[in-house]
Image 1 (tube, rainbow, N blue to C red):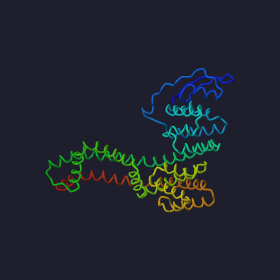
Image 2: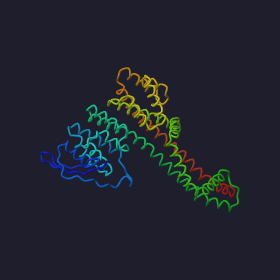
Image 3: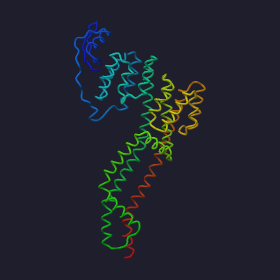
Image 4: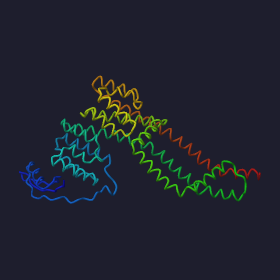
Length: 400
């Protein structure tokens, strides 16, 4: 399939132009003939440089704005192709502009909007594509796009809160590690040479720090390659199913942090599943998409088990009771939703509740981590300084 650039006129004499993906020029003419457009020029579009190779990409914020604006345009009665064309021209990001152009071209060529989006899985995930497909089938595209934009906005808000809460402690730890390495490699050896000249027996703490400094200097040439190797190896192992499963299990069992991760997982699960079900996606398909987008292997495994039980005739709440990932309150509320026939509404309420719980947990974790980090780092750096001054104190006391 090649992309063809065309120009032509409608029966009213209006000039039109665009792009169509087709096998040959005859197919392009046939498509335009169905649209009652007489072509004056058709040529193969030259290949473009892949801008993604030079870094960058499409940000989540750009997709949210695109979804919200397209929803408004369709709600106002604007045709889909025209809406895509307007948003394509407005796009600042050249990569996103190119993707929107390809989507518009495919839609003009007779492809459904969902199929056109599905050709760009790195930008539009399974959840997005399946919801759009449900919107096209039900004739409620504007409502579906509105729900999608709301869902993505809440998900982005949750990510920002967690990243913001972790940034300050992580930056303090990084700076403190750099300072500690600097002291061990450059400062403590100077003290050690002075102590050697003095010929005095050193206190245990001072000798331990000097030995630690000697070890750090010996390992320094190998430290960077070792860290890079461990980082790559750890990442490759984490990319495997077993690696993700072990890592996510450990994280969920961590004190304080594990509770926060569980709340985030429950909030994402209920919001995703509720959004899909309210948009008309089947329960099995909705759970399958929710499992793939959960971001946690333990949660994903639990949802897959639920799917198997539902296929065997069970309810959602039944198998969830056996999973420790989901708190009893969540299971009970889903059970009530199933009995009343309002699972999607109940899932939305659970998601809102856990959004508030995550906000409170993030604030509590931040207020708890900051003093803990300061105490630990103060003890480490302060211990290094005291260890270096202990022999000097001993000399001063002997001289006194």
